Image (cartoon, rainbow, N blue to C red; front, side, top):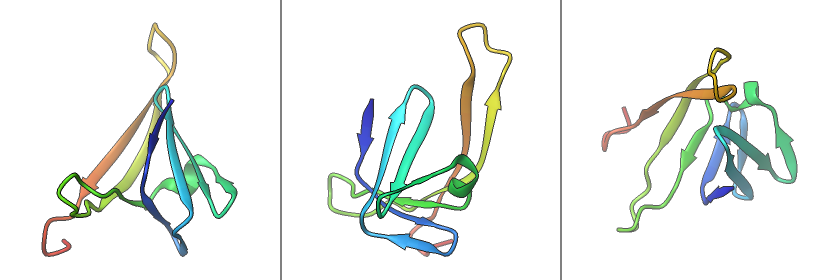
Length: 87
């Protein structure tokens, strides 16, 4: 399991005490101690701090499960990254 340190903003929810872990291809998230389900992550913004101290705003636009994989189900995420202007 890989842990990602990030501020998470999901819908109208905002938390500085959020955690996001990657287990296989599935993102597992908690916000202020509450586990978020997959549909709550759509629209969430991950804000990990980069090595140079800058913050990358990564938005989860979509989540789809590919059920046809021989090696098992794979969760696919549509992501977008805001540029320096925030767009």
